[in-house]
Length: 261
Image (cartoon, rainbow, N blue to C red; front, side, top):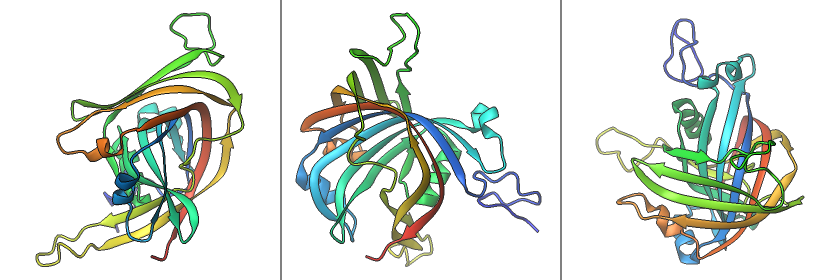
């Protein structure tokens, strides 16, 4: 009998791209709040979500992951990846939520985990300045005036360029946040005559647990989006750049909620 949590299913069940949950994560986060055109945000929202405000956020994250019984973090190629997440504000039945129209990762296992959760993951290259608590011009220390940068490139083209300067510590997380985002889980149908009838098309909400946040640094930001021949990210480009944040986060994922539309 073949087995496993995800494809490929095999006799031993150890070759699947994604092992069974729970999935444990820890990562360093560079985030920037910004505003975009209201009509463009509304156009990206699926049925069941309503426009809330023009508030958005972009997250650049270096993650490290392990499964419940695995030690993937001791084999870094199976554990580490970087991603860029774009979130917009929305309302679900009168409750403020976040929705993810775009997200890019650089590992197949992260992409597969994301599709299971409803994150619309694609492959892309994210790079983030790493701070070090050492006396060096290259260190980008987390202190007043510390500067960090981040970029996103997709298929050989740069899509996002970001620079931040941290100024003070805060207790406030970026808004909107990703910990309980609502996603659209979608899996299409290939059978002829049913291409417009997806096998799965539903709103789901992530149910993360055991969330831990490090001290949060807040500051100013410069954020630029660039045009792409077919990726519509520039439709959500900033009209106003607001606060920046840098912090570390840890959480566990093993559940989600299927939402009524």
